[in-house]
Length: 200
Image (tube, rainbow, N blue to C red; front, top):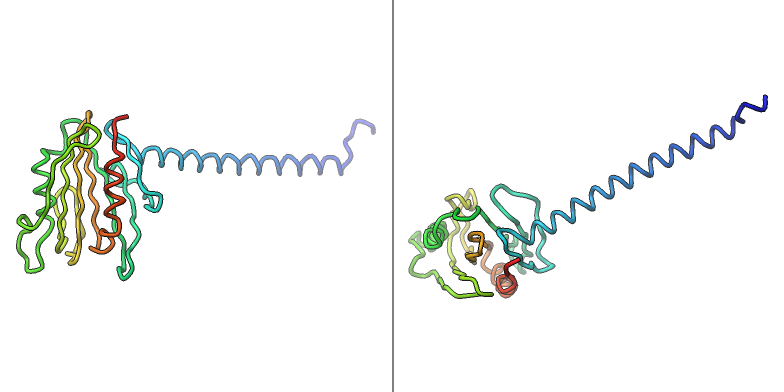
């Protein structure tokens, strides 16, 4: 008689064990989400031996093929959509020559009357934090194409701000596209991001 556990005691222990199990599962799930978030933030801010700092108001997106990171930019007043910054890293000695990539980016745009944008585009080569950087600024109809694909349908009134940073482990490509007003609103923040790029 004295060897048997009272019914209320057994029920109480079973209830506690169940609660403990559910709590442990919930905590494991929470830790898993937290680790994933930390990993995403870390990987989104470095590639090819380089690190950079993106503005807080730019929303980091999930993984995309061929991209080291993708950011969604806020829309300017009057624009129905914001911009996007895509960061590409293909590996040391990969991704093609700088000039070829600049031509590829310019080839994704046309003027309003359907002509090439080569004569109206702005390109510049400078050094930032000891590394060669080539920048591109072009406006017009964004038609896309090539390995760094653009939209499936042409988008007039678009602008591209691009930068190719020649790092120690290969080139890092920053390609910001979006409606002209939204890109203009993010132009200073993009420049600040470029100035934050440095060797690890």
